[in-house]
Image 1 (cartoon, rainbow, N blue to C red):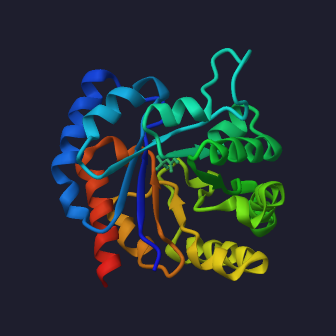
Image 2: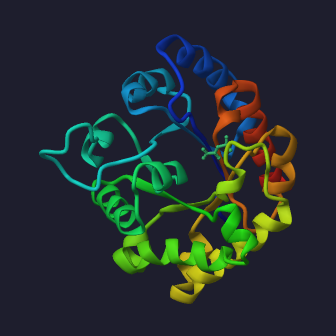
Length: 255
Ligand code: PEP
């Protein structure tokens, strides 16, 4: 059975004071989501202070991005080894904001995935279609291409315990959430795609949904067979909202 993962992507938000207040709330309510894996992904500059604040609270730490390079002349970049040094166990790769605004091609995302894995991080591979692609009936082709780029590069063995985050671009930060049926259909398609490579890979890989997930819609999304958690942006910045989603995952897990 796959354990639900509820991850908060703080994006470029926060400050020492705001993070402390947010984490105080999340840590205090963490017990509401027993059995669910909970993760926070703060901006890189706050990883160290967040790591210290969550010690002993059963909350995993993830980065929002990672360099595909191991070290050297890459000004401004953060390597996978540095992230493990800062107690990260996960890193996002291929978030749509990186793909659309910062030039993360499928090939670069695959290289980042490989660099993360080589350093012992678990990659959370973000994939998803734009509104135009969905309306053109291209959703499956787009997400298959994004997934295959990584699988072709690292193979079934190299995929390890990686998580897939299906994040339709049209739902991220827009308030327009995919319906449970729309999300489930893509998740099932992705699981089938994994199964075509390897049955065990399909059974073990967690596929989480992201895109305007909030307390009000989390329950019905998380009740879908192939939705194994959520990657939460906006709602992860309010402890109560983030915890409500984690609690909905705990409820689905026990149903
Ligand atoms: C995200 O940034 O990964 C995300 C899903 O954002 P939001 O929940 O705000 O749509």
